[in-house]
Length: 194
Image 1 (cartoon, rainbow, N blue to C red):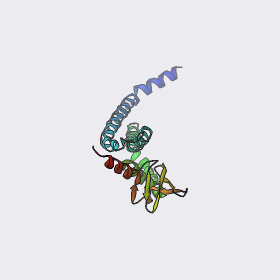
Image 2: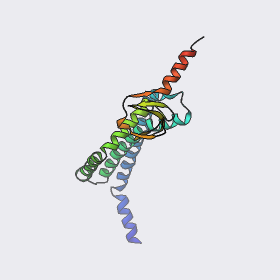
Image 3: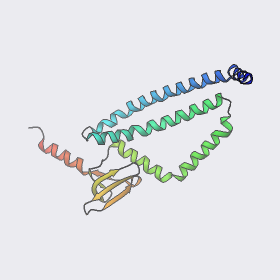
Image 4: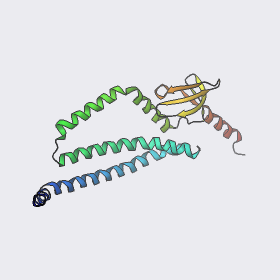
């Protein structure tokens, strides 16, 4: 029992309490930074999210989750990774020589291996952000015309007039014409002010 008490006095009398306090402060500062960055992202994207005011609520919620969620997640991952590296250094672990090269190589390999899906996801994000179309819209994409049945980050599913379901990778989406919005605009213009 005496050995355990001496061990605990050695641990708490050494540098550990100061390291813990600094690590907690770093975590708190980075949590505050993540909160402030989240508010800034929300504020920056709110104008673009108002473009879908005429859509049904479930579609607006889905779009908001994609358009705000991805930048928020990327920002948090970046801030938390930096905080983790700083906390590891506080506890005396050498991060520069061992951890950073491994993380860099892993990131590079992931980018090379997943270049196509990442390109599709980036285009899908931009389609959602720009509010080009949503499920239920009649659209013409390239030389295909049909109704959008599903829009994900990676692909758009289109039901053509002859009943075929076509899956278009979002990176291949070019020349979009939203026929539903064109028809709605024509109806509004035809009814016009009386």
